[in-house]
Each structure stands twice: as C-alpha cells, then as structure tokens.
Length: 258
Ligand code: CAA
Image (tube, rainbow, N blue to C red; front, side, top):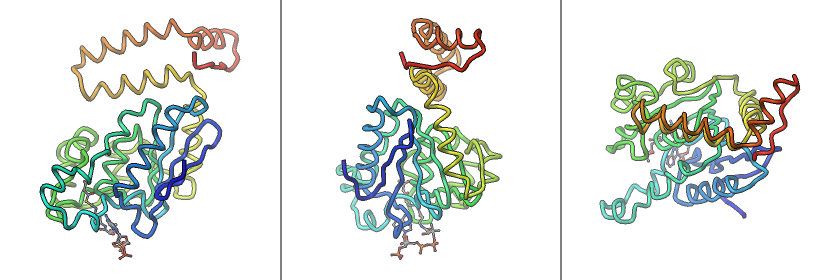
C-alpha cells in the first residue's frame, strides 16, 4: 500500500510508522488518520510483526489536529460529518502493542494520539500539552478522559485549562511516559523495546494488552477475574510449555506464537 502522510517500514519483527507532514509539524488531518488506521491494521494482520512503533519527527510527534482543515467547519460539519476525529479510535482496535516514540511537540490531538498508544517513550525534548482552550475549543480525542486517568485530575485540569506544556521530565514524573531518553537515542530505545516485546509469545502479548486496558474500564474484581481466566487459558498454549521448559533447561525460550 502506498501512503503520502505517513512512512511505513519494518525492522525485523517491528512495524514502524512515521507521521510525515513535516511542514505542518505532523498536524493530523483526515488523510493522515485514514492512512494511519490502514497501516496499523495491516501490521496487526501481518503474522511476521509482533509490535508496532509510532513516531513523528525530531521536532514534532504531532502538533494536533489540523487547524487549517477545521477552522471553517460549522457545527454540522463537525457533528454530522465527524471529519475531525472520525476514525481516531481505530488505534484502540489494534491487538498488538503500539509504542509511541515521542520527540518534540505532542500537542492537542498529538498528545491524545500518543496516549492512545500502549506506552510512551519520550525524547528529552518532548513537550506534551492540550492547548485546545487557546483555540476556543476543548480536547476532542480523549484528552479530558485519558489525561486524568494517566496523570491525575489535578494535573489534567491544569494542562487542559491553562494550555501549558509539560516537558519530558515532568511527564515521566507524572506517569504519562514510561521512559525518557536523549533525543539521539529515541528510536534505538523504542525499537529495542519493541523487539524485546516482539520476541515474546504473541498470544501472551495480546492477552496482557487486553487485560491492562480492561483496568480502565472495569472494577478491580471484574478485572482480576478477567486476568485470572486469561492466565488459566495460557496453559492451553504451546508457548507456555516452551517458556517454562526453557526456564527449567536454563536456555532462552523460542516461542511459536501458538
Ligand atoms: N494544524 C495545522 N498546522 C499546524 C499545526 C496544527 N495543529 N501546528 C503547527 N502547524 C503549522 C503552522 O501553521 C506552520 O505552518 P506555516 O509554516 O505554513 O506557517 C508550521 O506548522 C510550523 O509551525 P510554527 O511556525 O507555529 O512553529 P513554532 O515552532 O513556532 O511553534 C507550535 C510550534 C507551538 C507547536 C505551534 O505550531 C502551535 O501552537 N501549534 C498548534 C498547537 C495546537 O493548538 N494544537 C491543538 C490543535 S486542536 C486539536 O488537536 C483538537 C483535538 O483535540 C482533536
């Protein structure tokens, strides 16, 4: 498949997607989000891929939804046409892990897109923010919902109401990102993490993703019950036999994703 607004490549078992509208700091328009959804679904369906990395440029992961594209929308364009965030939740249907490798600006929809990924590795120049209020609107792709879950109500309110940016150090301290690395090591760090994951048992990877995500949607009792059932089901996999046997034989496991 050929894309214009993103670049797609594979590195071993890792699928790499790079947002590629450099002149607009990777502002997220309908074309880019459609292509992103298509590329994510293609990697999800590809047996050779175990993990996906989503990144932008050194200057911007993404500076938000494309303001030029929506500036003249009427309420009916936004509501009935749903052009702005029509297909943004596609990423949530992806069953393999998606790591966001964030350098530079991750603002508005860019911050929201990063938060839709399974975890965020940030370069030390990363800046996160929800500045929609400065445009007279509010976050429209989950910012008011995912930020409080990720970093607490107080910080989420602060960011959404004042539009201030959070640097990488604060983002890590707040729990928004899992690691911060120097900019020149960002892609190596993200690809190494993705390769580590991709060499695990794919059924276990997918079950962990499903189970951790359920923690946001369920009570603790329901979540623990779901996890227990998935855990039990791993004993029906060949990979469980291989993983435990390899440990006992003091050798690395070789998983078949079965
Ligand atoms: N949409 C469209 N174009 C954008 C953009 C956006 N979100 N962000 C940046 N650009 C464009 C600029 O218009 C500029 O284009 P030109 O060169 O043609 O003028 C180019 O990218 C470079 O931007 P700047 O010259 O502004 O670069 P800077 O380094 O001075 O500032 C910045 C960088 C602080 C990120 C600034 O560009 C900025 O504030 N961008 C807007 C951020 C924003 O408000 N995001 C929220 C969007 S709304 C949203 O996302 C809704 C939602 O929840 C779904």
